[in-house]
Amino acid sequence: MKFLFLILLLSVVSCYETTRDCKDYKTGEFYSEVIINDELFTSKFKRTNELQVEVYNNKIDSSKLRWINDCEVIFKTIKPKNMAEQKDIHLKILTTTDSSYTYEYSYVGETKKQKGIAYRVK
Image (cartoon, rainbow, N blue to C red; front, side, top):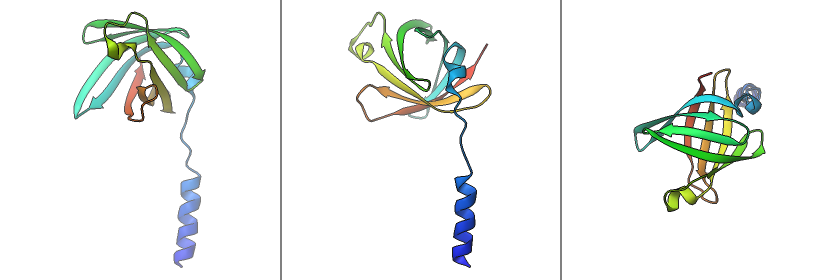
């Protein structure tokens, strides 16, 4: 009986597949939310295939984009103001819906990742 239950459980779980239509999110206007140490950080950004302009904390930050594939991109700050901004950021889209995507990001080469969600504005 336990064996039958296990097979049934595995068949149900194996049918679950997350949606990942990343092409829909390569360009557009977005609103992003990230929770770091129980604090919510928000930003707004516009993205083209090659450039992203972000407004965070009333500051504008622009980055060049290099798409690795439809779901992964590298951000390089155009005019870094400090050492941290000189580091490239790797972002990977994990799941998508019709109006948002969940992502993880980190500095290139680092293993510690943060997660966030971005919502399409337009």
